[in-house]
Each structure stands twice: as structure tokens, then as C-alpha cells.
Length: 253
Image (cartoon, rainbow, N blue to C red; front, side, top):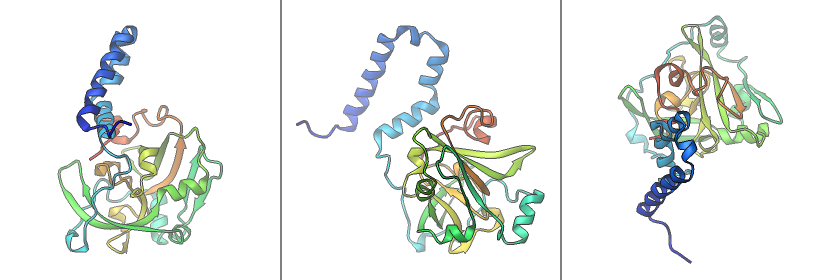
């Protein structure tokens, strides 16, 4: 039996495989749409990183002594809608997290129900695309537990996070695939540094997907929708900033 494949061998194999694909599929290679999809920076980034790293590898976790004295908020600081203001006024007592789409058991969960589930706390670093970082302690329910409870169907490939905030008149949303959804550090967090999330940091609940940059960590999450494709949602690129500012859909770090 041969030994483990080295990183150099794997990279070489990927290059040979790509060359064989272009040689054997000349008709596809001449198709502009196919070339753009195959060789886009986004796809090469995603494929290379995932080929060379363990998909379940953990993001670094820190000690309490490493926590930042001040944790900035990213993105929207307050959705500012009438509906969100009403929820906040009642301290989110009437909030429900909706889990819909390609699931066998749609769920509508209150914060009290979520807090009764098995929880995970982790001290991790938030890396913002704007160039700043901060280390904080997040507590929430592992996303995989919610998906298991909802009996996600086999056809599901992505999760859409529908949020309470708007950018102009456009509803904010984000998405991840199932590799990140079932990662052990991907949680729906309701607490930061042992305190309930405040509005600026995404109350009542936000996504923490620790292997990606901060803009993927959707705040003010109202619903999670399991889908087979990203097409037809927003502008089809998987998120507000991806649709309108050219951000990469896969923002792995």
C-alpha cells in the first residue's frame, strides 16, 4: 500500500488533472463561460484551499487572556426597521428562528428553545475584510444540530441566511455550503463574551463560521433556508456583498 500523498504530489496531481481535462475536453475549453467558471479566482481559491487542508480542521482557539478589550461591530449596527424595533423592545421574547426550504421538518424556534439545546463556546479571532481583527468568546448552538433537527433533505447543497437588516431597499443575506454548515465550530451565536448579543453585534442571533472572513458571519438572522442552488436568490452570487461588490463567495482564511 502506498504511503500518504504529500502536498507537493497533490498539487502536481491537480495540475496534471487540469491539463488532462483541457486536452480531453477541447470543446468545453473553448467555451468562454466554461473557462470563466473553471478558472475564476474564486473557484481556484476555494478548490486549492480545500484540496490542501482538512475540511474539518479547526480555526485557532484562544485563551481568555487573549480576548480583545474592545470588540468592534462589523456591517450594519442596527437594522432600523419597524419589525426589528418591536422585537428588540420586547428583548426578543417573540423572536423565532425559521428553518425552511429543503427540510423534512420545518422549525420555528424561540431563543429560549435554542438556549436549551447543547451549546458550544469558543474564543476565536474575527478577521474583517476592512483590515481589523478582534478576539472574542462566542456561545451558541452548533448549526449542525439545528439542521439535524430539521431533517435536511439530501438535495440540499447550500444554506441561505435571511437577515433582518436592509442595505438601502435590498434585504441582506448570506450563504454557506454544507462543508462549512457541518463544521464543528460553525454555530448560531447568541452571546459574546458571556453576555447576550447587543444590537450592534447582531442580536438576537448571528452566524459564526470561523474559517471565513467576517462578512460571511451574517447578523440579525431571521431564517435559514436549505436550497439546492444559489441561482434565483438575490443576484445569484450567494450574498449581498458578493452580488453587488464582487466579494468572493468563499472567503476562507
